[in-house]
Figure 1 (cartoon, one colour):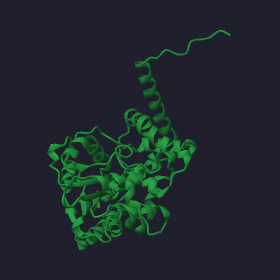
Figure 2: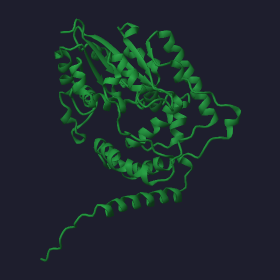
Figure 3: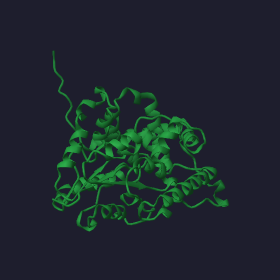
Figure 4: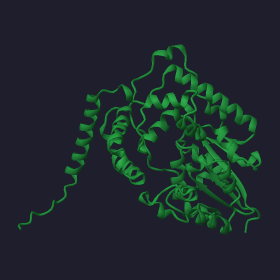
Length: 358
């Protein structure tokens, strides 16, 4: 048995490559176990169900009964593992409040507990989180979301957003009782970096040689263009509330998202205007200043978390957003999606039910 077992809790944040990392960890479970590193087999690719069970947040209509004892099972596998390390991952962890953080951090006996926070620059994060909200049945308009999270009002949404995306605030809750060297901030590489660089950084924290574990993963949780995002938001307004959230999420990822990203020609990104971009840079600089002062272990560079400040020429460069679309543009996109669905059906004909005479 290893002298000191290490437990790594990857807490998120959401939209920082978490799904990609969870799929790589899942893909390499057997090989990692051979190297002494356990990625517990609870739930699916990630450990969301264990967090849901810990909090008891889901009722039976949403499948909550299926998750009963998942947290206890996660803890049991971790405590029983006789290898050198255990890693668990769920971006749901990041929303834990201080009391819950203390409970989680104290759940693993004499193990040496580490916390991993993956971070990405907020110029990419802010639009990405709104889009993720839409993929989870929300209906808030894009500009209302931006006004909430970038404004100075203490709205419930803003508190929820910054509780996860403000790395310094989140890690104040999660670092209690831990030496700063056991708190790891892994920065998501900027656009254009090698596709496996995030995995290289993450694996290094775990003490693994990243090259020994295949990291090629099919694109997961693809981004929607402006028009596709608004189509889905409007669907949510009319029909979303009638579908249990777990079923909704599953069908969006497997059915609607592929159709929207393939059929709708608009690939434009969600825009941010000059003042919004400046606000994001100001907030980013404040967060990074606190992270430097805290002395956490940084893998990558905190400079990657501070986006470039917009120049004067950027004042008029804001593109059209979801709120600017006309009904006709949304309807055209819906026709494109219907054509995509019909084309797929025609390529894979199935025999319909036989007519039965009474």
